Length: 335
Image (tube, rainbow, N blue to C red):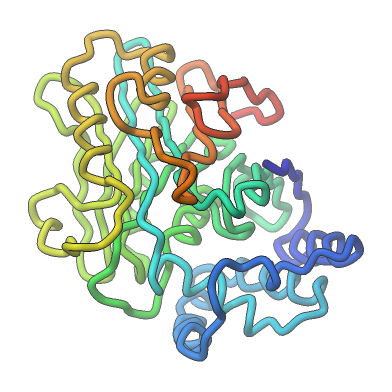
């Protein structure tokens, strides 16, 4: 996993990073694990007005990367804006719980082993009006989980979409929340206002102890603050489980054992009486059932695991499969 620190405006950050990679002979578009088709380009261009209206800074960052790479901005937009919508890789597991003593959000990122060395941990310190954040990603500008300086943590899982409309995809949606929102309540309010394109779940937690699970797509948003009447927890993988969202699930796709992973999370969180950091590490490591036990020969694995300890203001990350690699504290970012 690469570790990068970015400081400046969105455009400055994009240009410096794109230029640095080009200087070392690394060109992003040559490393994309899918084809940049005419369909992707057309879809991205149809979504541009949405980003211009709600998140123009992210378009500036993409422009900066393209300029730094001396490449066509349209191709970068096609890659980044179409991601998760055409179609996503359905993977990842996430949960959050809160007690009087603990507030934790944990997430496993499951992805292709062929590009795991390109995964990034990023610290953004933005100078053009956004909150700073620490996040993890398989796709540079996109962010898949993170915590911002206000103590809002968010993690995503993708769901195979039944429909596609212009708008925010999961990775850019999560990044918007980290940059713009200081707590769970504000994040949920924003989600109800933004045009959403892809299908996904979002797990949210903040330092006040609020947690939430959001299941959403281009047609509906549903929210719950707990999946239990006795425990305060939420969990999700790559299928919808809230009653009004289940009709949007696709049958017969390769969702990387999504239901099996969900049942592991649900059972462990329902049965456990000691919600703490040790439990979170053991759960993500697969000690309570199938969660990260992929056969790497299939090209699939858990490529990182992270825990945001919002009570203690700490971050722990396993840079690989947590069943084989220990969690280490990341002390470089204060929130």
